Length: 231
Image (cartoon, rainbow, N blue to C red; front, side, top):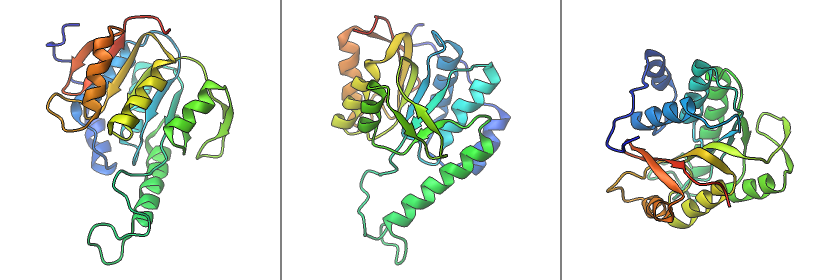
């Protein structure tokens, strides 16, 4: 695909209703990119979401899986540890809400939103993404937030990277995904648009210089596709 080409708009009336109820920071361009990736997956390998917040992108992925008849298993990982959060401190200048209460509210919202709007519950692990990939690499079993035990590991067909956007964390998330992403698989980097102040932009440019990935679209965030086999 020519990177100047605009992706097919994927927004539907259902998504309008969904986003009235499920809070989050998911751009419509990301919705289009998710729909494109899911409609062009190279195989039946799992899909991975790094960073879930209250679940809007999780619900969107599940929606398009159902709409497109895709059976790829969805895994999500989030420690619900937010950038800038200060344990024990007030939430901004709130006289009564603390960061711990905010975190608990967001995680509980995720649980409620997923149980309400997802056709099939994802396998959601409450864990730092680095620890998650250690278990993934060793094919270890773990229990998810819904109380289910499952073995991790194997190839990945699509990853949505939306965790900590600082350079070190974003680079680590990419390198971990890169170990398992199949040829023809996709990575969508949130907040990676040209001109963005987030350090994830530096990671994307490094990835492109490697020659292992091509740009599918800038919408405005980067959707990349692997053009080489994993090393």
